[in-house]
View 1 (cartoon, helix red, strand yellow):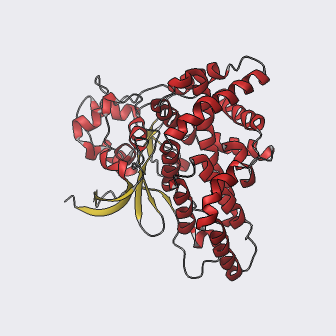
View 2 (cartoon, one colour):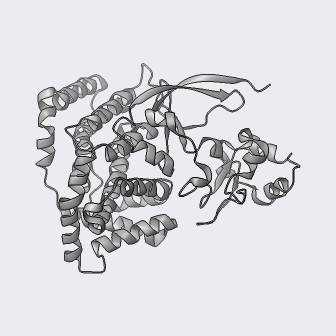
Length: 418
């Protein structure tokens, strides 16, 4: 008997309206990456006798290595870059679902792009913005990332697979960040929701706070807790917050260093990974906009002019776009889910992703001029999410490169973002 249980899940409001658009999707999730199959689903597929589905399953579903099995991918349908899932029919619909029903899908196919997380107190859900439809909804308006409770029914045989979890802090927890992770996450989210701060400014100001928090490492726990309270009072008091935009605007930003660091990271990705066709097309447009074949000085001048004349006015008019991306990232990553030692690195990963998105938008602004659109932002966001966030090797490489240049520090956030 297939029993179900209803659970109230905390989720951004855009998830209320999300549903897969199937064959109408501009870039299907059923291509270009290995599709993980959990063990119960794999064993179910071995019992299928309906042809030609049974033959396709036997041919294309392969058992994983022991290492992959340990990470939950008992088997997979391996796909090359640009290759579509062999289970898609002529209408680009899943033949497993059309033949056996949605309950026959693996948890990966059933859940995506939903990301289930636990912050140590309750279950929450967001979407990976590598899904074009999820990105469209998440960036739609200022209310899209307002949090709501959604009642969701889960099968007792298949509870939601947790993607990330913050450990519950016990009474004896002596790591300041693990003890107060929920509080720090709420501070970053609150800054991102402030209308007076852009997404970039909010992360830079949040980075100033977290740099002070990271500086409390090594202190006796009671003293560190008292100091944390003082840091938050200092930075989040009404009068201080009122001056925050002015404070951040006064930070020195060497645009040449920003341009060089982000361009080098992007060129490294294209050289080592290439990316999907849509991402390569995006990079071609960025290259044309910045005229990357010209001298470095010429390209930098194009970059600075496009940023000042087109992108900044556009983002000032559509302040929610990058804010919603960052808020979704904070929720879906359960930031901070590690401890004090990992705090700067965790936050820098979010900042680097936002900085790359902004860099590509400057390139598009250089190409489009005043015709830059919300759809350009949506396409850039899901392109970065699909190509960079899902690439387990690239972002660590970027972080290592930034560290080698002395740029992997909270105090240089302004260089990357502003």
